Image (cartoon, rainbow, N blue to C red; front, side, top):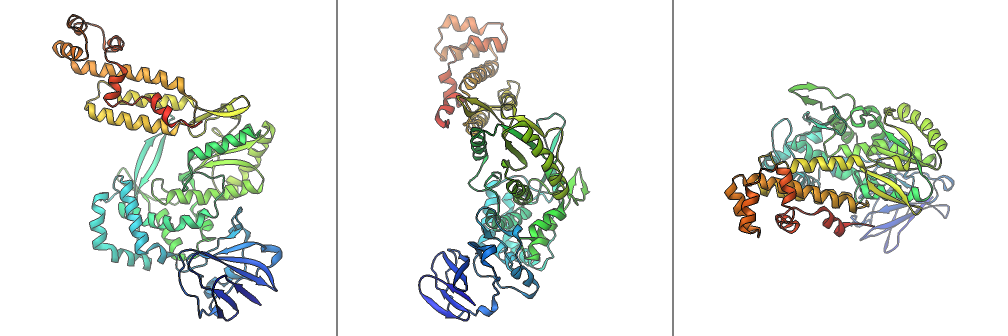
Length: 529
């Protein structure tokens, strides 16, 4: 005998009592007078439940011993169980249960595609794609051309998706050089229309999977980021976990087993139309150098859906690590497992590799995967050190070198760009870089970098002045006496040497007024201790 209790006003239904809600409420499911489960009804549900016939719904026979205090999460409304889905309603698997919250996240619904194709969801997807901008795909359509196209073709497009006739376009291959010389990151740029559809799918799936994802996963998730991952690393080190397994998955996006991914997705998503649509995107193919390439393995990196799918896949690794009792931090495919001793870390690495390669069908890069002390590790551009027994951050030398190379490009005196463009790009890069590395201790680094960068800027302007008359006029405008201005204007010293001579005349304040932000000054504003 089932009884379902609400709080406020109740109305009679066959098989029990149920409330009326105007906001998020809980349904308590009891067996023989004892609580066995709860049904969460979301805030969005604002309807009268009077007269509902519960014969149309089939609740699991949950035993107290197995699922006590577990919650049945129902999204938007109680889902009807069809004949072909009966087995999912009657028998639940522990793999469908979120590890932390204990919420059963099995959505046995035939209506997920309808939620994806809702007008509001599609409008939000379009706005997000427009906000992100980006280049067009193989059809050449740009983001600015998207709205007129959707207004004219939205009905036929939605109908094709509903009927399963929609065929995604292949992605356009773009290669971005990695830090390692000669290596490239392969990106797949979808068409703007496919981007909207992928974004709409991601918007509906993200809340579902957020309940399943680990607390130790930080990449591509709302209200989580690299700084949160680094703080968690810092906490683990402060707790004595100073040895790490620095895990590197070889070409993760290019080697994902699609069948395994579909299997993992199917545990939660019961709408076959959605699974089919995702599978089509995985198999859409790539246009590289004008030639079509099939994509039977891997998933394109660059679409709105790829980050979510990567987290869905790697969540299997997260759950395995949690079941084994490991401390770890994962940001996208960058994973670090924390241990208290080197032997423990080596043993952990040896035991986890078979799971990754034989269960998830991913490949561990043995050259880059290592067991190391935290002080020698680079993670998300940072390095770690201990000061007075506490873990602190530095900018890794490779990140410093990369930053200086970028400043060299921006302050290249042979580069034919206007001062306004150079100043804008310089300011954007410097502010963004300092914002990202604000957790690190780097006052001395930034003071030296500022001095070096300002010297390069002075050299740029000195070259631009070219003629002796121009140099003399500009030096006078900077407050230099006539005789001294003429002397410097006629100097035969090179640009770099003259930049040092101009140090006092072409002052730091003047450079700051021109729009070249001081890294050190900005760091003092955003620094987080």
